[in-house]
Length: 465
Image 1 (tube, one colour):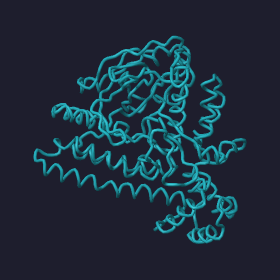
Image 2 (cartoon, helix red, strand yellow):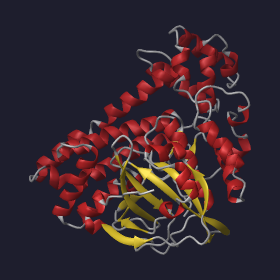
Image 3 (cartoon, rainbow, N blue to C red):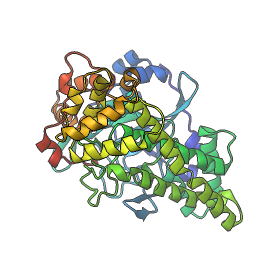
Image 4 (cartoon, rainbow, N blue to C red):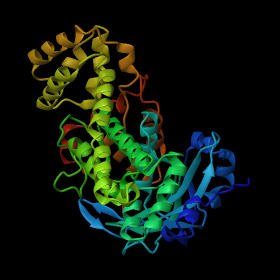
């Protein structure tokens, strides 16, 4: 099969693309292949399984340069330390998509790391990104996970793997920070022109920024509507396209609590569930700073234009969040008082976020007991349910947006531990559940149950490097 990859990014900004080769796999073995995505890309799944490993592990690509604020501290030179952009391909709908490797070995941006990845973290990205896609949330997607036969040394020796990832692009807020930091305004302009051509043809530079603000506000609201916590919202992990990227210490919230965090490296809760809109807006302010020279030659005017656009974030987020919550509650009109009271009750009663909204659909059909039984304060939830039922909620609409199955943290850990030990059956079963997340299915009750409380109390996620 003849595959043609273009080099649009490398051609547009060669100063930000370092030509590099992946570490050859010692004993490549295909662990997971996303056949529906392969077909979207015009790739034959049968060929990929039989003869396509050399393509999936294509040796030569470019490591992308970018900068970033990591937990608030600025690093002027980050880049793809263990990843390669193999190039761009045109999918069946005529869209240009990046094909990218993760875990393919050290690059000049590796900063002391080995550039490799282990089976577990790569399966995590495959699993969670496909779940997010099934939930209708913009995301990069995993094409395949390939075991390499290498041993990766972390706290203990682990089996190595490479992820083949597909994205609308890998342009990040940190990409623009890097270009601005060089002091080369022509490089910054070429990067912005490339982003416009790729994502918003015909836009001005200020319109590009406005598109990113709107996309990121909507994205973070969608995360929060399903209880998703990214875990490491550094500016180098925020895309211009509005896709979710880099599933490292990510997790799904169990009991509703805005302060929930699971990341082992987020000691102060900077990226906790409830902080995600604040951090997104902060990151977008850093993008505005990088783009200022393109908004106007007059610095005061450029700042004024940037601030006016940035201030639209709150309205975009509110629209997506409240609109999404109306759908989850199955009602219309002003839901803010109802929602505020509900979330306070859920917090006080340690109610599982995913389970409650799923079971609320049963309450809309006349069976309130499963939902109310999640609460200790029955009088309070009964009073809330009465107010809500007076609004005549639409159970069918609720079922379409409230998932039954998400990648619950204990299930993910079980599947990854088994997968790292060579047993992919738990991974495959969980993947099958979470990629059809809406509506109960017989035999999948295990995948809908919350984690044991002692698990959630101590659970931590790690970045996988």
